[in-house]
Length: 197
Length: 373
Image (cartoon, rainbow over all chains, first blue to last red; front, top):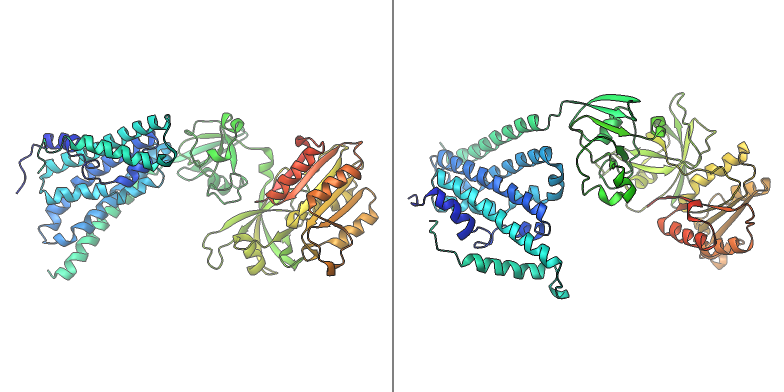
């Protein structure tokens, strides 16, 4: 059964109240390593948003028009991964053409979007929660923007932390993990305000 | 349909469609059409296909910008001044640039993708750089890990260079090594012998090029050389040359000394040559250099061993080359015409010698060196 959530509501819910990063903790590794610098964070966040929107759309189509009619549900994971990999490849070529500086600053993390668990996570949520086409696209775009919002917030906070004294033992990843914890608590305060499934 | 067939069919079908889409996007996104390269303010103009790196594209047009790593952005040698806008400097380039180069928009040509018309500035010397086909005609051991190799250039090819310059040897794929690489070595032959190139190489354990030259290359092999490059050369001043070398750092000096000796150029220059080695096992050309010293009054040869063994019965200097060098500068070398430093060897040796020389009154701008990491 398709849940009765307005796609528009779902879009905002997945940005703010059920942020895929801060309430499900998906996509943490690039989140922590890229957030050192807000310009790259912006670029990666945007790349994740585009990949998530396009892959949820394509995956929904593949799932509903090929996988499910043929009864091949057990193949859905591998198909999703192939779709993500192809979309990332294409995006990589486009970014290289449009903005070589962003391409270089994202470095290894651009191809690594392929294995960013937030992206596969969003697709799997879409499958489990039985979203319709519009809902899927809204959810994908919302989750991507939510990821972008979270990494931008963290990058901004880290930029301020850098200018302030931090106890030696907490420098770098230590203080970042604590910061993420606080951010997650703040976001979890909103959870459940809007039902997403 | 049988699910055993259906599953793979669906997965490969989807993959094939996506691969097709990628190929189509690649064709459109990576097509930059024809771009023009303007070199030295209109002196030379090339029309090439865009989409590849500047370094490789220039090499395709027979313009060889020096590059030791072959375009992987790890040597920083392929610097080119770019006059048109090619976007901001990439993080892969900044480690190799100083303030002045950044201000002049000097870039690594292996990192610049040709996307539109570009104007660049190259030093005139680069135009004399050529790719030579050569044959190994002599390949012999000087010590247990240093070899002297002579490459005879094919046909009537001639190489024109200054003593102290280097060539790059093109190492073909061999054994486990799947890609061709280029490595730079100073020429030890003298400029008068234009039909050949002699190199001295020390086997670096695990080194791609030296392993090839020591273990795989044989007499009679055909090898490609690119050159000449570099601005290490004898400077036209009356100052006394204080030359220090270790190991295969002998190469540029061998070329310089025999060139000066046979042509008699810079007759005012006194030459002191310090050669450091650990034991007699690492010494080579000892007899030839001592012979030269006897025939040539302005040449002084000081070989030194840092760890001479008692049974070797070593007659020359002993101690670290820096210590010997310092003692000679202080006590033996006449300083009335001024001193110039010439160094070739490991980075550690060069840094130590620069410290000794500057400490003894040779200004840093009068110290010239080739550092081979």
